[in-house]
Length: 155
Image (tube, rainbow, N blue to C red; front, side, top):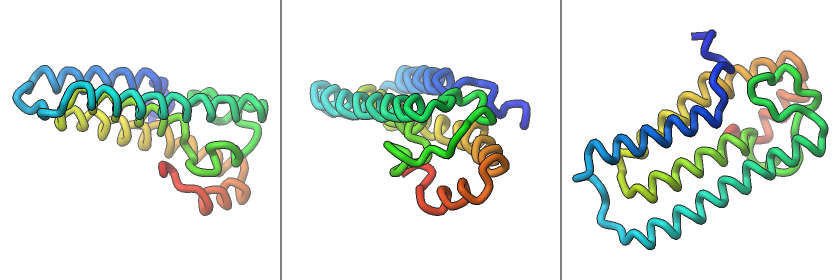
C-alpha cells in the first residue's frame, strides 16, 4: 500500500470521485431525492464556490510563503504553513475539493452519491495526508507537532 502514497494527484482523485458520484446516481435513479432542482443548484453553487475559494486561498498562502504547493512532493516544503486558512484547517485545499464534491452530490440529489465523498475523504487521508504529516514531522519536528496540536486535520 505504500506505493500508493503520493502517487495520484489529489485533483485526479477528486475528479474520479465526482465520476463515481455521477455513476452511482445513474445506476440507482430511484434514490434521487425530490428536492427542487433550483434549490439544489443554488446550494451546490454556494458550496462549490466556497470550496474553490478555500483552495485558492490555500494556494495563495503557499505562494506568499514561497514554498511548494505540490502535494506530490511534500518533502520540498520549506516552512510549516500556519497563516491564512492553515490557522483553521491543516488541509484547506483538500477540504476545498471535498466541499466541491459535496456540492456535486447535492446537485445530483442522490444520497448514494455521498459514498463518493466518503471514498475521497478516506483515500486522501490514508494516501496523501498521513504520509504528508509523517514527512513534515520528520522535517520540522516540534514546530510541526505544536501545529498538529493547535489545528485540526479537516475542520
